[in-house]
Length: 261
Figure 1: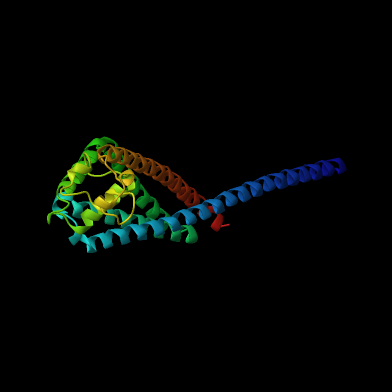
Figure 2 (figure 1 turned 135 degrees about the horizontal axis):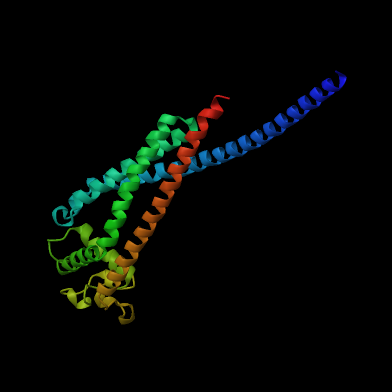
């Protein structure tokens, strides 16, 4: 009987040791998952705070552009359609940022679902935009260059607005070129933006500071670079969306069990 009692006590101690060991393992795993969860919450909070700022800036730019729409040739440049799309994307990005911030702080499963749904919509929009940028790259470049050439021809007429002339001046100053084919596109003389020295008329501009080469080649290179940059930014945004959706799902999956403990 005494031996049976000792055997029983050893088995009990062994079971308690075994239980304590696995309890420590579970605590370590719990601590690790809580650490990952906390990191992802902070990550989503930072990302969505930046998203809110970007959304507000996008909406503000679109609204201000609408307010000043009288300065643009609305019909030819598809101004309204373009700015409307930008405005919609801005509101979508803003909504995603707000829901993401609240979901990161409250860990609400409902808000996490809404946040993931909005991210999925934005993901689809970004994919469509990326495909459009890649497929229509040459067409977009041609439209912009044809528009630039047309505005150069009408620079000194009443057919162009002051804003359009200012846009041409900015391009010529930045790209250090003049006209579309050459400086001879302007009649009677090139504008001040065709001179390296600011606010200097063409006749008073030193020959060494005159931009005589046309903007056709420079504009093509600029448009190609700009569209490549847009594609790269959209690609990064797609990657960030996937990471954000995965993070939100991970937080949602691990919130309920721990809150009930």
